[in-house]
Length: 194
Image (cartoon, rainbow, N blue to C red; front, side):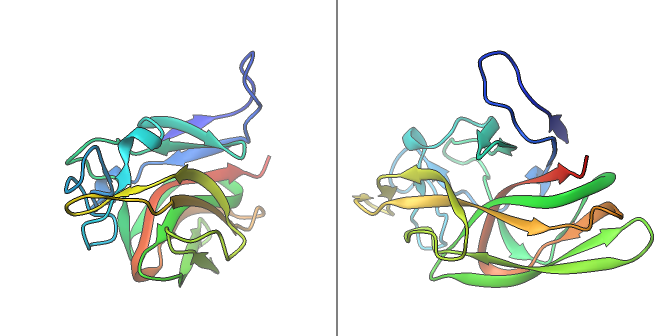
């Protein structure tokens, strides 16, 4: 896991957040350098690497994330399958998620587990990657086209930033992701309560 707080000289301040390491959960090769090099949607279409952020620290909307690598063959997203991932135990007020849906807009339930054994839930809604944001998300990454199985396609695609509430009065220890095979999640950061 990594963390980022504010303000290096010359850069906009970021929120105090812990970046969650999802790399062990990735199963989707969603970014490619050429047609046929990836499949974000399980149908052979992928984000073009030349219009995506480089892998590593990525900031959008003042939130820092760890963006996955953008190279052919690299795993860059997970499919919503109820995976449970731990976070550095602390008080947080929001989970910031980078992701998109495929084959239409999708919704699922995420669960937050706290150090006292209690839990809370929140609904995660993500818009289809080839459509403008429709569920209160912000567009974090925009690409003017996508790679197809055999040729490029002039269809704009997006990675969305969606936020979920966390109880800041409790210590968050883990997050269980929604069960929805058409959700793709690329990064999560937990915004600290103080």
